[in-house]
Amino acid sequence: MRIDVNDPARRRRGRITVDPTQRQHRVPLEDGEGEVFLSWDGTLDDAGHLRKCVCCGCPNLYRMRTLPSVTPIIVILAFAGAAVSLLGYATNQLVYATLILVLVIEVTIVLVAKVRLVCYRCRSQYSDIPIAPYHERFERENAEAAANQPDPVLPESEESTPGGPDDDP
Image 1: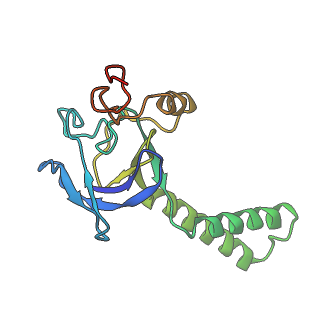
Image 2: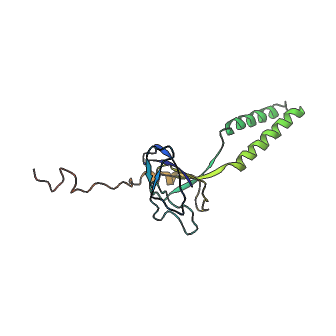
Image 3: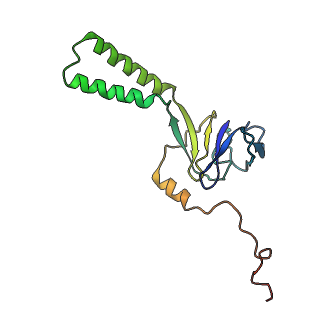
């Protein structure tokens, strides 16, 4: 499993590669700029599918299709081909061949595109893992609910903070 790790403020920290069967708790980042602490408690279901984020513990994940960087160029070519055919300039055999080629490339891109899981809270991305069928596409209601969840960081206890209620002046 490859994880593009973000912190709770959704800033990118780096990338790690872990084996879910080993359940490593402390993993160094691939660029050597620190390490990440993972929480595996209740993150895998009985079939071994990821059901919550190992970085922040958020139980809400959604699936996202990743497209190659050439996709916008192909889309522009497809719209240009549609405009050419609507305007009546598609009478040349070369234009028909080009339109068919663009269609084949676009269908191939959609079929080859990989699917990732993304955490609603921290936006960490999980790839190269099997995805359970209960993970849905992005839904705004789930994103708003995850944004309203408290941070997983535990607050400091009142005894250890100076100026607490038990301190004498």
